[in-house]
Image 1: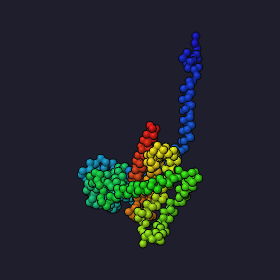
Image 2: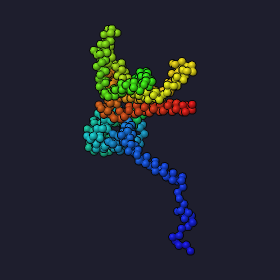
Image 3: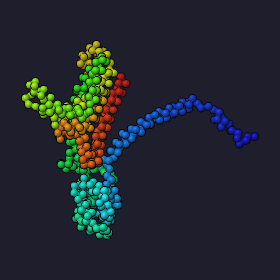
Image 4: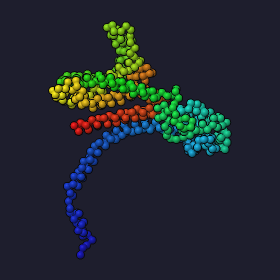
Amino acid sequence: MSTPSTLTMPEAITAETPMSLKEQLARAERLKKLKYGALILPLVLFLVLTFIWPIAALLKRSIDNPEIVSAFPATSELLRQWDGKNAPPDAVFAAFADEIVQHKGSPVFAAAAKRLNMELPGFRSLMMKTARALPPTAGASAREALVEADPRWEEPATWQYLARNASPYTARYLLASVDRKYDDAGNVVQADADEAIYVNVFARTFGMSAIVTAFCLLLGFPLAYLMATQPPRIANVLMIFVVLPFWTSILVRVAAWLVLLQSEGLVNKALMLFGLIDQPLELVFNSTGVYIAMVHILLPFMILPLYSVMKGISPSYVRAAVSLGCPPIRSFWKVYFPLALPGVGAGCLLVFILCMGYYITPALLGSPKEQMASYFVAFYTNQTINWGMAAALSAILFAATLVLYIVYTKLVGGQDMAARAR
């Protein structure tokens, strides 16, 4: 007769059956992954806190619009329910008048007035004038009090503009960064001629970056090839000269080029001494000086990826092609250059991305016609304190960087798959 403590047959078999080899391996693999995860967890947290979170916070600022909702929460809620065709109902006037009286003179009210004035100049004066003219308690006569303070409150267009900003998020900054804006009906239209500057700025930024990248490739490819084909002793000496500029500040190098390229600088004096020119050339405060300095600064970023790839290409490939009757130049382009394309892509990507964000070099060596997108980011960040516009311009540059990286990944991935197939 069995007791309560007696195990049944299946339970006894389960208790006595040892863990299978497959389960032991799976358990060991899980423990190994947990150990690896614990090792890289500090790095992941560091990247999230110092890289991913700041970028996400900056991109969020490009659509943030908290000023109006913070100052006029009740009015914003009512305006979101308004059809926008005729003048809003009395409840909107009453809520707006009460919140103006409640918040006037406060930082919240000032921030809301400043935000409205960014998109429609003169709205700040309207808000301040209305705040001074409103009585302490408007009550049922809020509509009359607002219209008496300024007749523009009777126009639906004024309330339509306020309603477009009665949301915690807005696309206004992103639209402005591509020369678009909202009209009175809330439709996206082309910005006015005096405001449509950013498309040209981005075209200039990408164009200058492409030109600098092309010059760096033309100058860096032969030097990287020379370094890769020389004995280690000579290659190490050349590498020292390539990385030597990294020991000097970018600002110092730009200032040095400013001294060298000016009218009485060493470059103009040398050209006049050899009789190549009769009068000094204009080499600074124009695109010429900007290109010279940026190519000098960014050239090592092209050479190093090229050299790292070329160093792994065996010279026997080209010799084999030549021995089979292919001319040397054709052998180079058909055999060596395709193998060096990953280095070309990496170098061009690195130089182009770095060039898009340059600010000091165009600011010191260029004229207003050479200022890139980073100049306007700094302008909105440091002078006008318009973080939304600065974040929107940065978002465009960030999107361009992602597109370039995706294109590079697709091209390099396709080449790797083709190489494996061969």
